[in-house]
Length: 199
Length: 199
Image 1: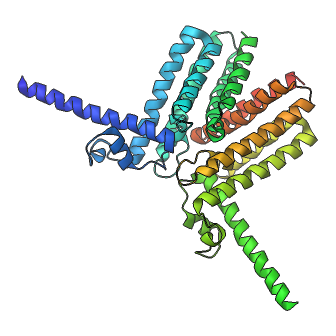
Image 2: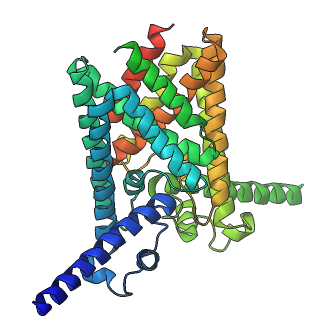
Image 3: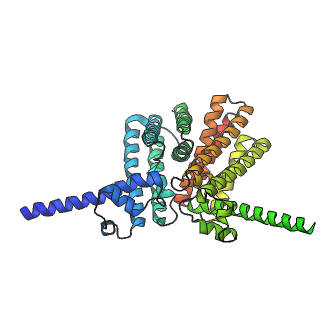
């Protein structure tokens, strides 16, 4: 029993290190980009033992970037799915925008969208870009499905879903560059007006 | 006279080196990001003499990133201004999107928006980010002015202008990640429908 508890604790601690490294990677990539983040920064941020990163991520930064992007994409998809079911499309857009607004405010405009960080990777971690593409596609599908349930024809639901994802992603980048929430405010106003006019 | 010609040629060549370095920086940054581009890559791409980069850009990468971002922002603003005057807002959006579509097609989805590259810089070249913010603002102002000339009230013209800039910037990133033109096609369809419905 003692052996099992010790074993379980070791496994739990390892899982913990691995998960902590993924969430540290998400936090650092969204602030500095993948190319701008060193693996040693991730190790330090996560508090994991030095040298452990290649134990958990044998392919190094490429693997970590891919997993961090997928992880962030999944979390956001779950959130959007829940908000759409509870509040409908227009109010969901307000919530998504408010979430990113708060993130930008809390980090002095440093921390943007973690999936966009993967999307912008072209050097060490090309697979992160494809993973980001899949995450964007999953949000588009989730939004389109909800828009169809709210009466939009399939093609229109698809184009609106892409507009929502692209406009919010772009607004985060423009807001960061301008150190100003206006792009997010304006995009939210246009998108919610558009959706409410057709509800 | 001979001296003057020789002097003029030297000045022209220097200008040429400097300009070539800026356009090489634009080309490389939009493909690899600022953090993913080494100064030596810019020198090599431009064909300028090794070691000359600190002669022209004493602040190094920070200065080059700032100038490349400003240069790209100005060129795009001039283009948008000309298209708006000749073709009006909806057709201008189609042209902007077609320009980026062609760029993505010609580079196998590698080369996105050069101003976004500056916007995403957080490490070596923080001033590039602010310069990108100014470029985005100049496009927003150019578009808003044209939308007001086409009958939109000032506040609405501002929100529409931001939506256009943010949606296209986001669509370029999503299209790159998905290796698919659909995000750009869909955003163009939604934006032009929106503008034409109100013309």
